[in-house]
Length: 235
Image (cartoon, rainbow, N blue to C red; front, top):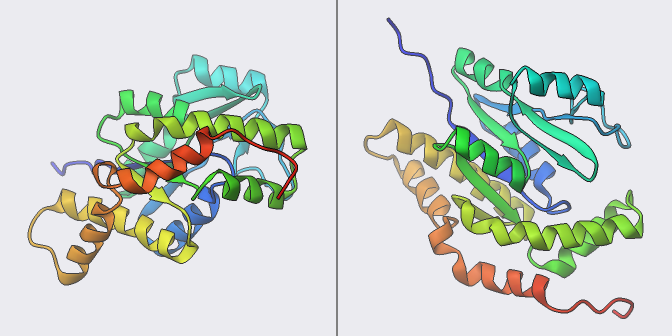
């Protein structure tokens, strides 16, 4: 009897505006056999979002039916809307012999870790609070009140960074993509075991620099920028 493939599950979390979507899209383009779990939500589509592409947009009653059927790995209510990760993506990855990438918030990541303790978690941080605020304003799709609320939420979310396997500071896009790819490659090599090739050793070394135990000096000033008093108006 052939043994079923157990997917490696990668959880990616980040405050809104950290550049997570761009990084995830680039990762999926360049790493084979990695499926993306598209979240379900009760919020309406924004801008050019399409059903089944960024999210599955469902009604509140539909979402609650899926909860009753226990078909979510995790779900949460955020700003009055439900978001959830369906179990079916894990089953499909298992059938296809693929690994699975989940893009979920801190609350959902905690739930998921209880169900899948072997999951590899990656937290993406902005270089500092000012950069995050600039990115949120550049998107220009949110009202000022929403931007301020997202910044408050971000300062709460980043306090949870110690619960993650890897920390990725997204300051330079190309380097961040390389680091993210190295994390996936390194975890796959770790599971396979055996001797590493030169490229394998390089990926493992790059990923290792982003492990929680090795990022203290890099993360401290970022945390400090979020806890400092905010002065609005001047530049």
